Image 1: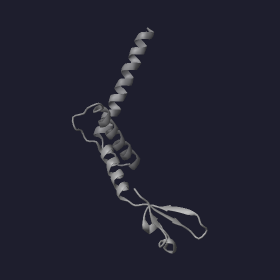
Image 2: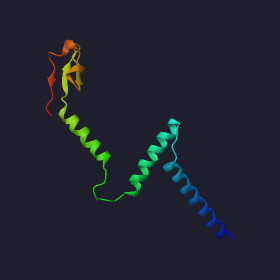
Image 3: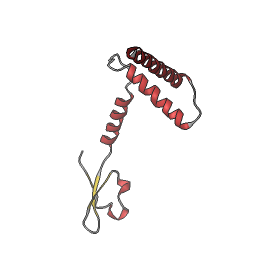
Length: 109
């Protein structure tokens, strides 16, 4: 009897998972929280179903990381010293206060 109840609960749980899955895929929500949850779930599901494939599928995360690395590699960082003699780093020349721009040095990549 315990085994039959166990199997019944497994079947009910699987049915709830399938119903929730189909609801998240097919239903259009108007609430912002549910919309964001649906976008996350659909993206997660697509990645999960294509896990391990190497047939040229969409690699948005990899492209985003490469683009960020390229952008940061192209950017210059600067070093400057303030009136108190403290060293500061800046990600762009515009971040350096105008009074210290003349003495700023560009860091080597």
